Every structure is written in structure tokens, then in C-alpha cells.
Amino acid sequence: MSFRIAPSILSANFAKLGEEVANVIASGADWVHFDVMDNHYVPNLTIGPLVCEAIRPCTTAPIDVHLMVKPVDRIVPDFAKAGANIITFHPEASDHVDRTLGLIRDSGCQAGLVFNPATPLNWMDHVMDKLDVVLLMSVNPGFGGQSFIPGTLDKLREARAKIDAYTARTGRQILLEIDGGVKVDNIAEIARAGADTFVAGSAVFGAGKDSDPQRYNSVLANLRAALAGV
Image (cartoon, rainbow, N blue to C red; front, side, top):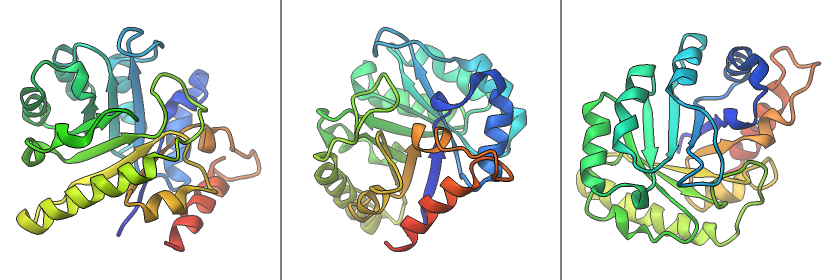
């Protein structure tokens, strides 16, 4: 299984965001995770399409936009136009989940569903053909720096079984992403439970070293080393 590391820019230094994005990708990250919060669906307010458009020239890496907003459909085309590659959303935030997934794909992006810790996985059962990514939250969304919820490991195994059964039946791959409390000392256990894509915010941007050529080389290398043992 190949693994992807997607640092969340929610934990980056916003005073020099373009430089942070360029450095973390040069340090070995695969995706840029972009957290969008509306102070409505979640109790925080972050960034929108204009910031996505601003960082798009700073990297060729995929921009993974996680929409924690309600309603969803209005903002999807704006992020697609701003340069997003992947757009995921919470099923509770859409009146018509199948339609929203179709809108994302019709806008030229890969599409995915996000499951909060207490959200059941059966939302995905009838839309597997439109899913490119399934993202499990291992914290309650809204703020960075929270601790990993251990019960997410069983949920990961359940999601992995659903995805593997679908892939065996159709030949189509769906990525399984995890977000919340991921760090060097638990990433291997999370991978063994079935995740192949890992969002890490404070664990990456909070561990930068001025002595590293691109500031984040050491922490990305440590995360890769932990995954190498899986």
C-alpha cells in the first residue's frame, strides 16, 4: 500500500503561507490539506477560495479541500475554480449527498465524504461509485491540536473492509484518509488499521526546525520511517 501525507495548513504560519506550503512539499509531503470552517457547521472560522487561489501557484501538489461548511453546494465551484484537486464534505451538511458528489466531480475535482467520530459509515453505501476519498475524523472538527480518539481505529477497519469489498467487485480504488491527532508515535498503528492518507497539522508545522533545509525535512522523514514498518 502506498501512503500519502497531507499536512494541514491550519497549523501553518499564515504570515508566510506560500513559503510554508512550498517548504512542506519540498520536505516530502504529498498533498496540501486545506481546512475550510464557516463558524456555522463547526465553531471556528478559517479560510476560503481566495486563499486557495493564492497558494495554488506555490505548489504543483494536490490541494485537498475539506469543507466543514453548511450548505456545501454553493461553494464547491469556487474552490474548483481556485485550484482545488480534491473536495470532501460532511454528509450532514448536504441535503442531497449524491448530487453534491456529482457536482464536485463535474467541477473537475475528486470527491469524498467526511465522517465525524459519531457519524455512521452507512452514508457511503449507496454512493461508492462517486467516491474517490473517504475521510474519517479522529477528532471532533473545529480546532487543531486535539488528541486522537482511539475508537476511530475500529471505524477505520470497518471503512477499509467496505472499500476493499467495493474494489474487489469493481476494480476501482478509493483512498482512506484520516484527520486528527496523527503524529509520529501513532501513525503506524493508524496505517495498520487501514488508512493510506494521513492529515497532520500541528505534528508537522509545530515540529519545524530552522536547521532543516526546508524546515520540515526531519518530521516528514520521521513520519515516513514510522510508516515504513507497516
